[in-house]
Image (tube, rainbow, N blue to C red):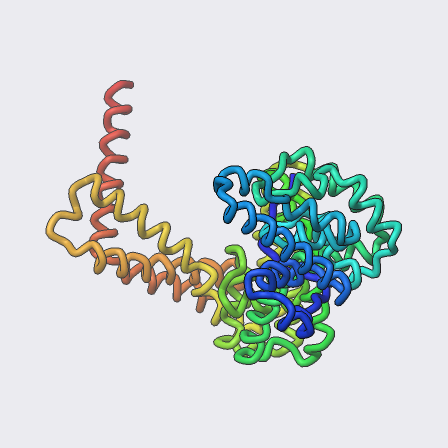
Length: 415
């Protein structure tokens, strides 16, 4: 199934010949110009067509003057497409018809861009002859999807790989240009790479391939989702760096480190190592999902990678970032427990949650340090954190302990 794209892609057009300005009135020239704006006509063809328009109008005016009704004259007025088919070549006529379509099909685009694609005359004639949507049946309304799929198969059969790739590049050109311009803007601010020529060429080829596959997937949601996942798993480094600069990477520990690269003063080699690790992770996640149909847990891989790449001081700076989300979740659970036993009455929720988040974060960081290095210093540091536990959390502990003692007492009485 294919979707339509609003594209204005036209072959070289002939301008209305100035030699005709004095020979024909404005009405005739206006109609002639409409044809010339869509296809390339020789002076001889323009003259022949203008004469035909003039004679048609003269005949119609004479009939009206002699008393014929408007209905009878207009119903017998020659159809313009019929006139054009007798004067224009089959390709010129196709140009004229296709030029009026706002949402062209693949066959229309190929024929209209035959010079850019270097199509042979036999290819053009075959496309026009075998298209599932004959030229005279062309309309702006979207054709049946089965017809579009037949045209897609015809195009793939008739075009060689270079022509096919060029056609898809034309289709996605506007979208690709916009994506590349966005990366250029980000690169100008963040200086993502030194080898900009290679990086931008890789990004351009990636965008062309992605948008072309998306175009061919059409409105089939399953195919679109598959295209998105495939290309998300193989983004070149330039695009990953651009996503990181805009904080657009999917949530992960590696993403958080890359977001904080400047704050941690990462070197270029460190940054590149992390981006390469992220790229490998994305590919592994995609492959695992295809094979197992469940998400791959990459926590150990990410944590191991980060510890290898960062210095000890940098890792210390990363710890609060690593555990911020978990601390917020824990604080939210704390609030729910406090609320359940009536300890939230008369207190400011924002103040309490902020205080509890800070405590939970310090505790998580302290535990991480102990897991890596169980020194007396780290054990005492954790004890200091626990001693500074917020008052409401202490009350929560007391309430939990009271329930535990009560339950134990009930069990003892049962015995």
